[in-house]
Every structure is written in C-alpha cells, then in structure tokens.
Image 1: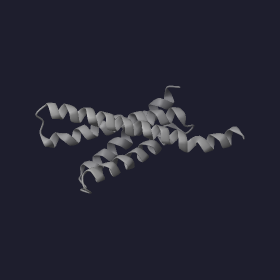
Image 2: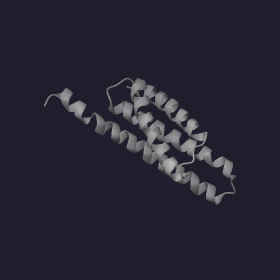
Image 3: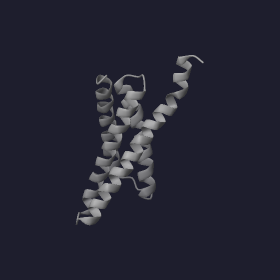
Length: 127
C-alpha cells in the first residue's frame, strides 16, 4: 500500500482522535467549572460563561492536535476540527437543555471556530 493511500485512509481516524480530545477537554473543563459553581454562590446567569470557557479549551486542544497530525494548512485543519467539535457540542447542549435554543449557541459556535483557526495556525507555525 502506498503512503498516500495509507495517509488518506487514516485521515478520518486522525481527525476523529483530535475531535475526541476536544470533546473530552470540554467535558472535563465544564465538569470542573460546575464543581466550582456548586461550591460557591454563583448566579445562574454566569453559567453560560463556564460553557464558553469549556468550549474554548476544547476547541484549542482539538485544533492544535488536528493541525499537528494532519497535512493541511493550519487554518483548514483548525476550521475542520473545530466545526466538527462545535456540532458535537451543540448537539450535546440541545439534548441537555431539552431542545431549548438560546443565543449562547451562536456565541459558542463563534468562539469554537475563531479559537480553532487560531490554534491551527499557531500549531502549523510551530514546526
């Protein structure tokens, strides 16, 4: 098997691993934020910021990992991985909220895509 065919076959696997890293980072950061909120007396209106921070960390790790593993340009790998991560996170949030759509979902999508592009560019330029 030639190396190009081997790389094409493993592209979805490498991208999937990067997205899995981002989802796990989102879950861990959001869980830590939820534990901190449970211990402190925090207003409910501050909770979406914890989700934004969790999404940002997940997107950075996902895009950084994808840019290091994929042979695309940094911005392309950042957009691909963060877009997939955004869709997964938005689906999780829709299920968690009982299919209630809010304006925070647009902010989460924007944060994911912007930070994903930046992390992808930085990862490619570090080589």
